View 1 (cartoon, rainbow, N blue to C red):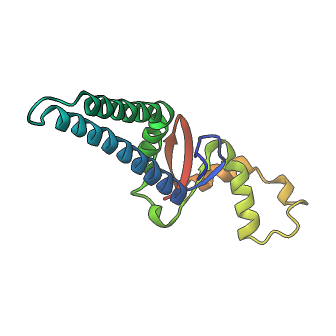
View 2: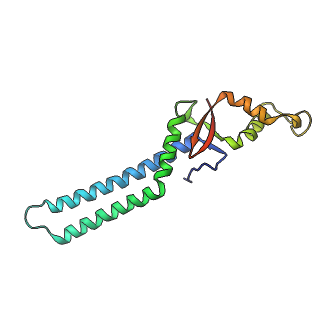
View 3: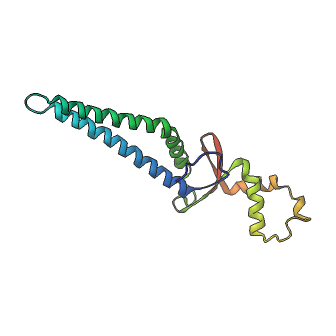
Length: 161
């Protein structure tokens, strides 16, 4: 799945849910690998009798590799994961989040409102009078009464409430 970022004009809540699940699973797998590798190191250290240094080196290398993989993942994805999680928590109580809600970037909302009006009102001649004289910003502002907002990585998105 492609990354989700705040430059998108339109998003679907199901894509956010899916990406969050992917990131959570990746993080959990990497965290578990670190834990398992540490347990292996401790098992080698706690065996009765003299410690086999080759086994200890191997277990230590595996642990270091697992820690590096987790650290690399966090460098690449932790901030995105936290931003998505915060955004989802802000909006998941509204509309039909789990089954799919359209999220509209604030800077795109006027264009979205115009397209919605054309679709809903069957405006076949939308490129002529009186439609070319409509104040679409005012129409979009009026439409926002039925929407709620959430902030994703510093950008405001609108979702039907």
